[in-house]
Image 1 (cartoon, rainbow, N blue to C red):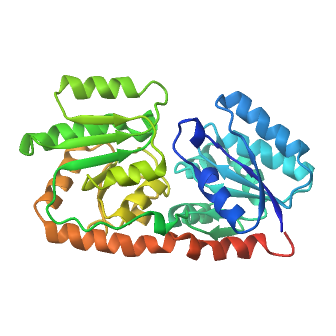
Image 2 (cartoon, one colour; image 1 turned 45 degrees about the vertical axis):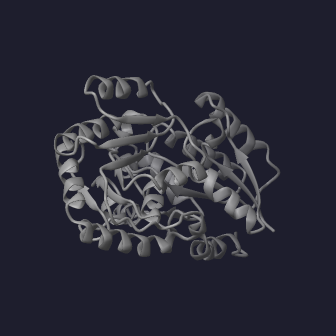
Image 3 (cartoon, rainbow, N blue to C red; image 1 turned 135 degrees about the horizontal axis):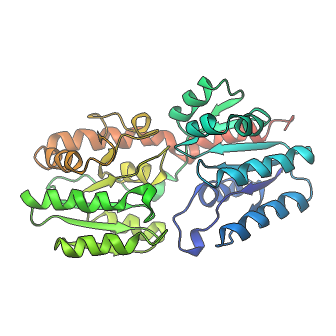
Length: 339
């Protein structure tokens, strides 16, 4: 079976939310692929050097998979791709960054080198596929982020309560302060409203969120990092899931929430309108519009039939992300004799 080197931020065991490398890598191993990883170093600079070293020294793998983001982590993808070209190794960028289209605007030369010379470019969302197509990027393959559906039991919620779940890292990109603003407005009509926020602290963003919640006298529970099974169990006690991010692509946490039967309300940034069809399987609001998100939650709280229809449609949609469906597309690429 083929040997793969997977490059990404493998930090789930260090208290961070699982990323592509944490989810897809083990699934590929179960399919029989030999997978090596880089890197699990917490320090970003050390992690970058471990990635470079591993790419330089690993006995020639059949392919290098590269989780590719739009912020500073874009640069590790670029330099790994250069080493792959020097070593004549096929590489596949897996496009995760919701703001990657902007990278084409600010760094077109680097993007062209990285993406045009790849064996193929895997697009988990239609949003990125269309954006890259506009940039005349070749060799685009659509493969959605995968989840193991049997790990997520769909719960039919009938007596709806204003209990909200938020699962993401505490970082400015994901706008956790907006979640507090949403709860503050919701509590005006639903004083019993509660919010649970789950995620690791990044950039020191957790403390301001806690301080704001305390100053407003809101009921907010915080968890730093929970194993997947723990937050799935926690979701049983909540009815809604909010996604407040400024940029996004195809977030696994939202796909998981849809699988669990939570009513999803999200900002309409990046790839979110391609994942959630507004008024059909979730509700979308403008970026950073806490009042609109609160109103969307109140609409669902007052309309259980709409909530039921939307969550049923959402569950049906995410069956397309089941690993048993997605793995065929990965096997088609990785078992190609020309790879």
